[in-house]
Every structure is written in C-alpha cells, then in structure tokens.
Image 1 (cartoon, protein in one colour):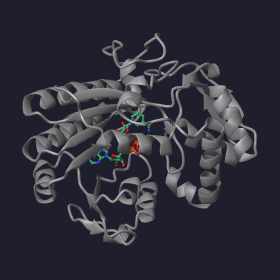
Image 2 (cartoon, rainbow, N blue to C red):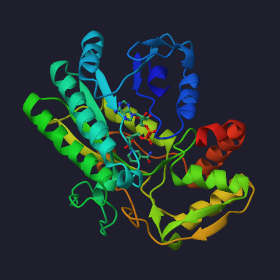
Image 3 (cartoon, protein in one colour):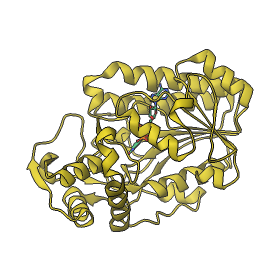
Image 4 (cartoon, helix red, strand yellow):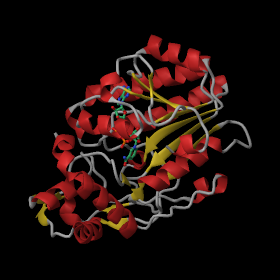
Length: 325
Ligand SMILES: NC(=O)c1ccc[n+]([C@@H]2O[C@H](COP(=O)([O-])OP(=O)(O)OC[C@H]3O[C@@H](n4cnc5c(N)ncnc54)[C@H](O)[C@@H]3O)[C@@H](O)[C@H]2O)c1
C-alpha cells in the first residue's frame, strides 16, 4: 500500500503456503483488492483496489517462472520478504528452510543478475546475532554463531547477497528485521498467540519465565523503513550493506503482556516455562546505521502499537478462528 501511495507500480509474489492459515493470507490479499477465486498459479491477477497492483502465486524456487516474470516486468526495485520464517518450526522442519530460503533466494539473486534492478532489498533477521550479549546489536558485531537453522539461512542469505553484489555489481541491502508486530501479523508469533489466548480465556505460554526482552517494532514503522531503504542510494562500492531495522528500545516480555492485557481488556493466564531451544534471551537493534542513510525514526510507541494491534484483533476476532487454523 505504501509503495502504491508513493506512485509505484507493484507486483506481489507469494506461494500462499500453509505454514500458517492460508485464509489469513487470502484475507490480506483481499484488503489489497485481490480475490481468492481469481488466483491461479503463475498468472498475474489485477487488483480491483488499484490499477497499479498485480499479484502472482509462485514459488521462488520455480526458476523458469521467476525468470519469465523478471524478464517481462523488468523490475526497477525488488523487495524480497518471501521466506520460510519462524525459529521454532525450523527445528522440526529443516528441509523447507533450505528449499525456500537458500534455493529460493538463490534464484532471486540469479534473476537479479540477468535482469538487474536498481536495488534489491532483502529481509534478513535479528536472529543472525545468535546469543550476542553485547548490546545494542550493531551490524559490525560478530554474527556467525546462529542458534537455529532459520538464523543460519538468513546469515547465509547475507553472504550469498554479498557475493552476487560483488560479482555482478547488483546494489543489495539486507535488512535485519527485529520482532515485527501489528495488525495482520503472523499467527505463530507471540503477539497473536497471546491475543488469542487472552481473548478466549486460555493460558499463554511465557518462555524463560518471562525473563526475555525483544525489540518489538511496529509493522508501520517497518514498512516506512523498508520503503526509505529501497530508495536510498549507495555512496561507494561495494553496493552492498547490512542494516538493522528495529525500534531500538527492547521491551521486557512481561511488560508487553501487561500492555496487551490493558488493550484487550482482559487478564492473561500465564503458564511459565523454561527457555525454548533455538531462542535467545534478548534482542536490541542499534538504529544508527539505518538512520545515516534514511530518515527512519520509529513513530509508534509500544502502547499505541499494541492498542492498534488489539483493535484489529478484536475487529477481526470472528474470522480469526479460521486465521489460526
Ligand atoms: N515478522 C518478524 O518479526 C520478522 C523478523 C525477522 C525477519 N523476518 C523476515 O521478514 C520476512 C517477512 O516476514 P513475515 O513475518 O511477514 O513472514 P510471513 O511468513 O508472513 O511472510 C512470508 C511469505 O513468504 C511466502 N513464502 C514462503 N516461502 C516461499 C517461497 N519459496 N516462494 C514464494 N513465497 C514463499 C509465505 O507464503 C509467506 O506469505 C521473512 O523473510 C522473515 O524471515 C520477519
């Protein structure tokens, strides 16, 4: 939406996989004027909400199809958000992470090699910092001890991107996202899991006995930062950089739950558990490098962001059973 408002023509791509409810993915697409009945594999669908938005259902790993798309559209900018996300799921289902995040991303890079955009922006993750104890996390910090395969694929993406940028002169930015929350978020992440449990009077699972901190970042701030990064040029070679994108102020998990209780108008039943495999106790983004090249400044304070998220959750709660399926 942000890019459409700024006058860009946009093509969205997603394979609409069932890692979490496809109903939620279709509902998001509906908001953008793309009706489920019109979606067919590899066929561009025109949005009814904007003449400048089209969507295609496709796997990144479908090399020939991806190449045809890049060849016919000749994108000026490519933003790759598609990936198999989730730290915990990567422990049970490693194969799909290699499939989507390594092979799929490799084809994105190959497509950019043959049909070069002005800039490729790729979603990396704060998880590459592993159990980094030095705070806040700086891009210069050591980030080569991932705690999960998910994190390893994201770090691998950064290295692959560097090689392609160097070899083929493709301008690339890898943005390390820090825990994104807000309306239309992922149902496997804590905010949605907590909201559902609070709403339905069920217990929430609080890992590491609540002794965790996350640099929760409101989705609207992420959108703004990604759009600004896309347009930010490179002053020198190599045209490659890694940047954090986060709120820059970590929040204790118990504080997050308290704010959510206030906004949902109900108390959480807390079930305290030990730390989960692959998880890290704290994330905290330094914003200084992103702020040097953009005007990025998070605008949404935690309480306002949670209010907005809870408002959305309660408005959509009747449909949310399907979204959680
Ligand atoms: N949400 C966060 O807090 C967070 C934090 C760090 C990094 N990230 C990264 O940001 C990006 C977006 O995250 P999100 O939370 O919106 O995740 P998401 O799972 O909601 O979105 C990713 C989308 O990619 C699609 N996809 C997966 N594999 C694909 C493939 N092989 N081909 C085509 N489409 C495919 C999925 O269907 C999904 O809709 C991801 O790369 C994620 O790893 C997110």
